[in-house]
Amino acid sequence: MDFNLTEQQEMFRKQVRKFSEAEIAPLVEIMDRDNSFPHEIRPKLAAMNLYGIPWDPKYGGAGSDFVSMTLALEEMARVIAPLSMHVQCQHTTCDRFLKLGTEEIKNRYVLPICEGKMAGCFCFTEPDTGSHPKMIKTTAVEEKDCFVLNGTKRFVTNGMFADVALIFAKLEGDINIFFVDTDTKGFSRGKKMEKLGLRGTELCDLMMDDVRIPKENLLGGKGGKFDALKDAMTLGKLCLSAHCVGLMQAALEEAVRYSMTRMHFDEPIFDLQAIHWLLAEMASRLEASRWLTYRAAFLKDQGTDSIKDMAITKLFVTQTAVDVCRWGMQVHGAYGISKEYKIERIFRDAKMYELLEGTSEIQRELIVKRLPR
Ligand SMILES: Cc1cc2nc3c(=O)[nH]c(=O)nc-3n(C[C@H](O)[C@H](O)[C@H](O)COP(=O)(O)OP(=O)(O)OC[C@H]3O[C@@H](n4cnc5c(N)ncnc54)[C@H](O)[C@@H]3O)c2cc1C
Image (spheres, rainbow, N blue to C red):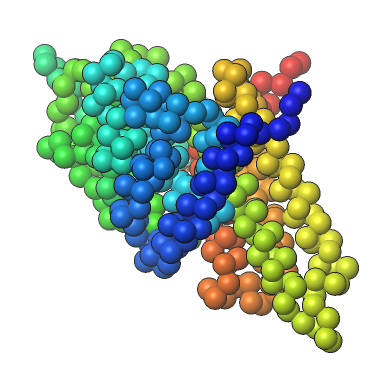
């Protein structure tokens, strides 16, 4: 076992931290207060090679690994989680194109996504279901020279501005994956959702009303894409865990900083035993979460990750993030609920992660089904 990051990974982490503090931090207000995505950051993210960290350079990727991707998502989320969410979405879209697409399709979509010229989105949730993809109602009907899509996708990250959407739909009763250019006739967007946390990811519904797409837009051939969805979601679970590590790191830093300046009877509250307990719990759980997440990334690099490993990681890390960020808020006393302090946003963002890529209840189901008996 080797718990050390390579020199390259350490260097990359430092570069992303510096970049995040210099270029991403000034965007926090626009994202959180205005619930807007700052498009001016896209060429900068691309220039830093942050849109395709583990992907092959021939498709515009950085040719690095999933551990590095994890470090980058963590560092960006330490500054503002929804930006990390946007970057993750670009990765999960490309992941499916790379696994299931032809050379022509990879060049048409992965390259411009990595270059920041195109945005992608990944759509399985619908008004009637998010937890049970087999219940989706979006349909695809095959005609002589095209497929015709009908249905609504809900809570789509990047939805307001994505150029291409990966759509999970039923064809002849079976789950399939299609990709749709969002300017195709019959494709429309709902209004931007106002939400508690992860503001600025521009979540919305996507509607398809007789959307006609070429036959080549069926990704990876006909049928049997439930496993492809589960596989895609293992990457999603790793990414979300990385964001939560970044959020917990930020919560701890804010709690330490605040407790050293807040005075009670001429002593900083940092000196109180009750505050020590909170900070110690926060630091310990952050560390456990961090290493569970890095292990998941390592397994992905080895190609030995499993749904169970990823579900365990996602369940533990996202639940822990809510506790750690809540304790960070507790250290701030009543000031913790003020928008003047970063912890207020961090706490709201942390809550979102228990609901994404499978709720905590669904992770428990995934784990228990796979326990040896
Ligand atoms: C910020 C954000 C971004 C998102 N981005 C995307 C995106 O880009 N693309 C996308 O497709 N989706 C996205 N989603 C949707 C998300 O993945 C779903 O909301 C999630 O899967 C839960 O689905 P649901 O809300 O329909 O809950 P439901 O499935 O209706 O579940 C409701 C409750 O019932 C519980 N429950 C349901 N079934 C079971 C069961 N079998 N056992 C135990 N408990 C159960 C759930 O845990 C939950 O507590 C996003 C959501 C959020 C909040």
